[in-house]
Amino acid sequence: MAYSIGEFARLCGINATTLRAWQRRYGLLKPMRTDGGHRQYSDDDVQQALKILDWVKKGVTISQVKPLLARPAEGQTNNWHTLQEKMLQLLKEGKIESLRQQIYDSGREYPRPELVTEVLRPLRSKVSANIPAMMTLREILDGIIISYTSFCLERDKKSGRG
Image (cartoon, rainbow, N blue to C red; front, top):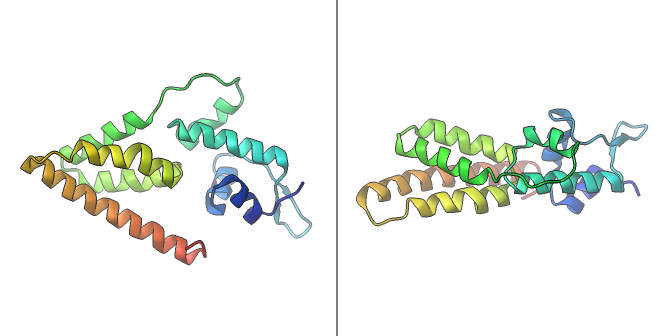
C-alpha cells in the first residue's frame, strides 16, 4: 500500500517534519515519489520507521541510527541517563544557554514524548529537593522547559498540528 506523508506520519506517530529530516539529513527513509514529486511511503517504510523509533526510544540519537539498522538487532546501551547527566552538569555549572541549546537540540533528535519521559522529568526530579540551591536550579530548569514547550506549541500551531 502507498501512503502520503500525512498518512504515514499518523501511522507511525512521527510528525512529517521529522520524517523529512530523517530522509534528507540522515538518509534513513527512501520513499518513492509520485509524478508530481510527492513522497509515497510503503508498508516496508512503515516497518523501517518503527525500527528507527525503537532505537530512538532506547536513547540512541537519530544521527547514530543508520549503522544500527544495517546490523542485526542487539542490546543498545541506554543513552538517556548520559543525556540527563550532561544536562544536569550544565545546569549546576550555570551554563544556562548551553543547557537551553542542548534541550532544543535534543528536541530535534528525539521524539518529544520520549524526551520528556526519559530525560526532562527525571532531570527535574533530580533537582526537586527542598534545599535552597536545588530549588533555584529547579526554577531555572522549569523556565527553560516552559520556554521549550511554548516554542514547540507555537511551531505545531504554525505547521497545522496544534
